[in-house]
Length: 282
Ligand SMILES: C[S@@+](CC[C@H](N)C(=O)[O-])C[C@H]1O[C@@H](n2cnc3c(N)ncnc32)[C@H](O)[C@@H]1O
Ligand SMILES: [Zn+2]
Image (cartoon, rainbow, N blue to C red; front, side):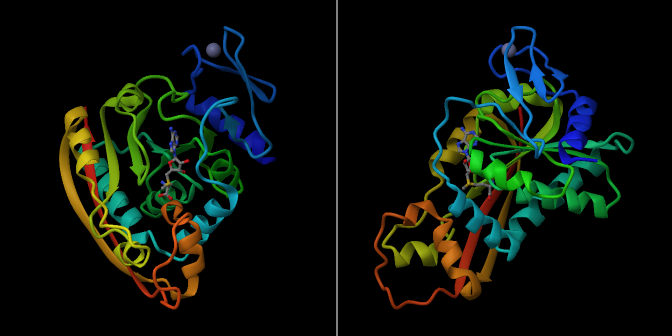
């Protein structure tokens, strides 16, 4: 079966899409989604849909996102994804719901690798999932759409998510912006969000090499506490040797693009990944 047909079957089965312009439910007509007010969105050959036609700023381009995909393949973010999976698994076990699949949204999914890995984690545990990834970057979703998996990927803005209310058991939000209002709307009442925020040591060797001060996350954390009910905080720390893919690491990190390296002869070896994982609800 063609990829587009498989994804259309999934879209119909999940029945969670709603028009980002007017909030009405969609019907699938041929290879398009149509709402009663006449807003229409085409489904691509890869089974993705672009819900931000005509607006949306893109900071991330194809080469940066392909570099990010390769860095992720090398395992650079494994500790982050593993921690997120463990927390979701604990939630799943505590919820006592063994029959229904657990429906997870990756909000700001980039190249789509993390939600793919989350899916594999749960498949290995014999747990059924329904997986969705959204990102405002067309190129990110284009790369994600190449993957051979069961994830539905959409180009969408986090502040106008194309989903009905109470759609998700879990929202993951990894190193990406957040929109508490819309997360709250699409999350089920007993659903939980998992947000990964860089901590002060995040990429500290890289930042030092480019003359940047330590990362400060206080503002993001206070904003989170003001807008949501934080249930758990978990520190994530890993050190990765990046010698084999240092160029890709530099390419995937936009904050470095317009900066001069202070020591051009320096070799990138061990890089620190320090982050905080917040579990929250509303
Ligand atoms: C640092 S990247 C992280 C991507 C991915 N979660 C990862 O860890 O590899 C931040 C992502 O947020 C996305 N983003 C920024 N603003 C957004 C918005 N308003 N709606 C959806 N995605 C957004 C960017 O396009 C980018 O892919
Ligand atoms: Zn509409």
